[in-house]
Image 1 (cartoon, helix red, strand yellow):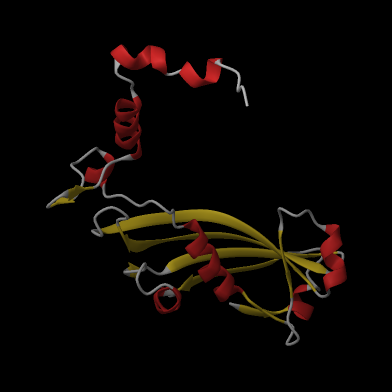
Image 2: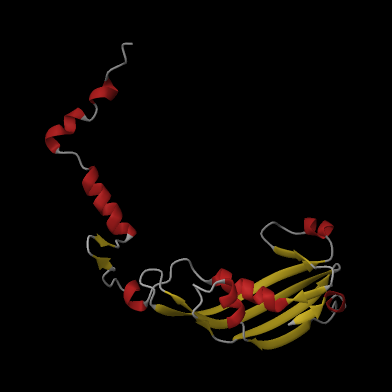
Length: 184
C-alpha cells in the first residue's frame, strides 16, 4: 500500500479507496521479536481524500496478533479491529492547521506514502501493556516459586494497609511529636 502523495492530492471531489490484505508478521516481529509471537493477515480498508493540499487517510484495520501474557508468558491471541485517521502534509508549515491530538505526518522527499508501515505502527500501538489469558482474567492463581509469589495490585495494597496499622496500645503515641512545638 504505497501511493504517490501528488496523485492522492487529485482526489478532491471523489475519494480514493483501496482494500488490501497485508501480511505484516515479519515487520511486527522485526520491531518487537520478544513480544510478537505471530500475527494473522490484516484486512485494511482505506479512504483517502485531498483537503487544502493535504491528504487525509481514514483506514479500518482488522486482524489479530499473538503475544505472551504479561503475567505467565503463555501465548494470548488478541483480536484487533480499529479505525485510524492520518493526515499527510507536504511541508512543516502545514502542521499549524491541525490540532496537537491529530496524527499529522510530513511526506518525505520521495513523495510516497508507505501506508503499510503506518499499519504496522498502528497495530503495535493497539497492543495493551497488560495482556492476560482468560483464566488469568478470571482470577486464577498467580505464579509462585520458592520464597516468592506474584501478587495483584489490590492484594499488594491490602498487605500494605495491614502492615501500616498501628498496634492499638501504641496508637496514642502517633501524634506525640506533632502536637508539641519545637523549643529550639
